[in-house]
Image (tube, rainbow, N blue to C red; front, side, top):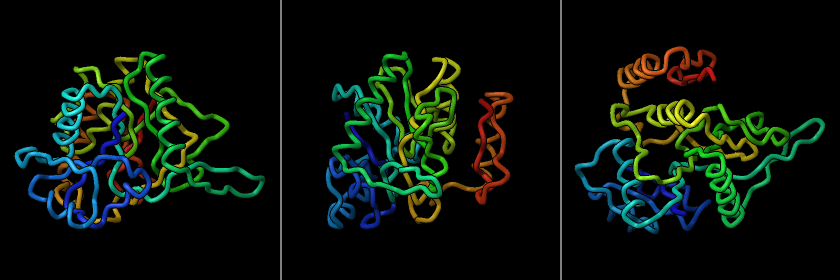
Length: 241
């Protein structure tokens, strides 16, 4: 299993290797030294001609193919907390998990995914404990994003480079249609900073880019994509599954 953290423009500011120290960070070649001197470990340089998160994800997939790695986990570089939620009568309490525990659970999820003849699994990466459902730990027609996504490397599954953003939603919908589902692990609590940190996709994504990719999703997957109007981020979408 390879845990991959794509990162750009955040040398010295990334958090995810504190949660998963064994993870590999894939950073632009021009920024390699900056990440190195600020303490990042397990660094792999992404060639400078590969730009944008979608092409970077495909570079990582091809890296796994070349090195005979079957199981790949994508996580963002801004992980804040990882663990599970204990539900009590009147409150929910967060309990952190150590790397060894997390990797063990991920290996189980790969086994479940393979047994179901699916290709990807993932978990909710929102900050509210209400998104964690310990009494209904799995959903099979749900959204999963590459903020925490496991993928079985099969030599033919890649992110669609027509989507400079929303690429993880596209591959999720594609796998639901082609495979019949994905494994949504809803017993994890996995929190990212998302839009709070500078760098990463935030440096190049624009309103027009977001709108165009959402329109493309709606055209490619009719009836399956809506705007999530109740969210603070107006480019969040809701899948009708």
